[in-house]
Amino acid sequence: MSTESEAAPAKRTVRVRWFWWVLAAAAVLCTAAGAFFSVTTVAAAQSMPRIVVARYLDALVHGHAREAMKLGAITPRSGDILLTQAAYATATDRITSFTLGAPVTRHGVTTVDATVEEGDRPYHRSFRVVRAGGLPFLPLWKLAPVTPDTVEVETAGPSGLSFTIAGLTPSSHDAVAKLRALPGSYPVKVSSSSADYSAKSGVAISHPAGSVVTPTVFAAELSDTGYADAKKAVEDWLDACLATQDAAPANCPFLVKEETANGVRLSDLRWSLVTRPEVDMYGDWYDGGWDVRGSGGSVTATAKVTRLADGATGQVTTGDIPFAYSGTVTFTGDGAVFTPARGDGSQG
Image 1 (cartoon, rainbow, N blue to C red):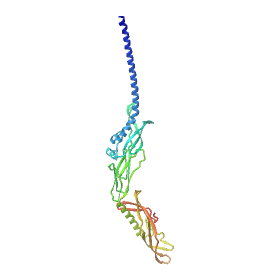
Image 2 (image 1 turned 90 degrees about the vertical axis):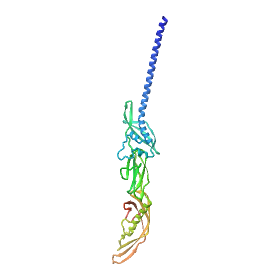
Image 3 (image 1 turned 180 degrees about the vertical axis):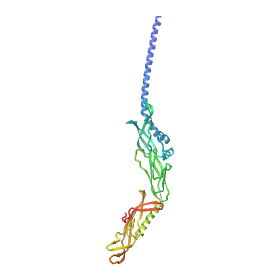
Image 4 (image 1 turned 60 degrees about the horizontal axis):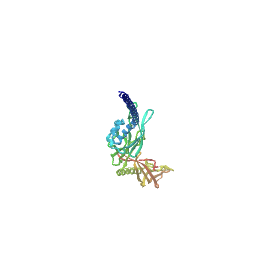
């Protein structure tokens, strides 16, 4: 009997010890789990702003314009012809990769800086993120509305030039179009209603918000027909100058300075061309027309001479008078028009 009674307290002691060991182990596990959960929560909260920025940029990398605009809270407005899935599909040099920095909060504003590779152009861009609910220790984040890029296209030339971008026609028919767009380069096709000039097609590059927007200019070039018509306009202008009987014909490159001098008056003046300058036209349309220059020309003037003292008359012919000219040619509904730079006989 005594042996059995001594064994019972020993068994109870063992059970009590196991209970406390299990309880201690459970406490340790709970503490470890809590610590792990806290670390994981903090890590998730810190990385969440980067994740929302990454989702937006990743959508652009994969060509998902609709998803990117939804994530970036970009709402197309009237005239935003480039803020569509179809337009973005035509873009080249889109964002191909990116790296993100750690979130930074200053004065209550949280931003994530990104280094973006767009075509062969790396550049930096900052994205603002805002809280979108969640728990105090685990907030949810979303992108603040993203400001789209800007594409600016300009046609330089006479009236009659028009263009499409990404296969679409801007709602404004002005020579300059300023359009909101997702990052990339968009194809531009220029058309001309005239056989005298045209402009090469190409691409227009988007510019991020906050950067200096430089328009992509598509300048008119003369066709062979246009060059011939422009040259004829210059020659017609010169021939009209030669046909005048004025000593100082208006808007012409030559003159006789004194009609009456030293008691002698000139009249019935006739101009004769000795050497016709070669017409040179330069490059693309610039600042209102195509530049024109002519040099190496010369004329003579023949006139009736009257001596004022007694009315005696005679005829005189000058020596060669050299001249040059410069100006611009443009085209109107009536054809090519030449405008001289100066018309006082001092062209050059």
